[in-house]
Amino acid sequence: MISDISHQTLTPIANLKLYAELLQETVCAGTEDEAAARLDLAELTATLCGQTEKLDFLIQSLVKLSRMETGLIGVHPQRVKIQGLFDAVYREYDRKAAERGISLTFEETSLEAFFDLKWTGEALGNIVDNAVKYTQAGGKVYVSAQAYTFFVRIDVADNGIGIAAEEFHKIFSRFYRSLSADDQPGVGIGLYLAREIVRAQRGYIKVASKEGKGTVFSVFLPVAVSSVMEFPL
Image (cartoon, rainbow, N blue to C red; front, side):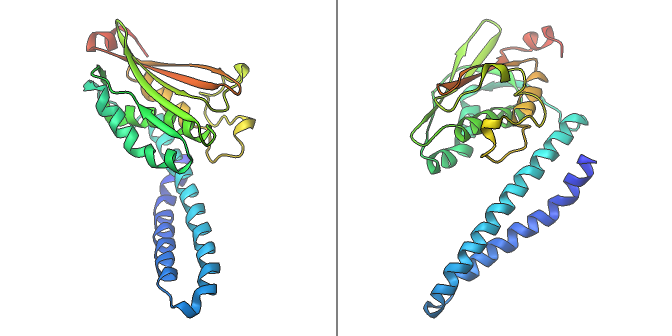
């Protein structure tokens, strides 16, 4: 049911976004005599665009979840530079971090690991998105990598609101939403998808956090094919 509903709503949501953007452009092109009316209409169209974006985000999340659970998402690990992963995620979330007044920094690295660049980018992006979302203006999100014997460890560290210890075992569950996150958009599947994508590549994720002090999510990716073969799902 989730799969059917998700896919059937993609087209109308795309149309809503298109017409909302066209409406915004029309409002901005009006004459000076219509200034007051344009301001009211501009506010309404901005709200329309914002709500449409939120709906699109929710549906896209459900589509990804559906594909993952029905086996339609296949990961194809190969040796990839971690820097390429960092660059891709930075490009996607740098603007959002800047808009929220948050410093987003990715440490340069020459390390390599064995993973699917596209889907691991999705997983790491979900974690970075959470870090940006739950860090207050003026805060920092720092992403770094270090080598282990069989894995490369990627840390996403923030100085945001943190996570209560009793929630550690819940945050990777489908649709779980902490009470402290009620004021932020989402459906509670970002971390679930991240864990499943990393697990499908024989990696794993750990979390360390203190309420009010920040959080560190650590993603462990295998460094070689042999490492992947040694760790069953």
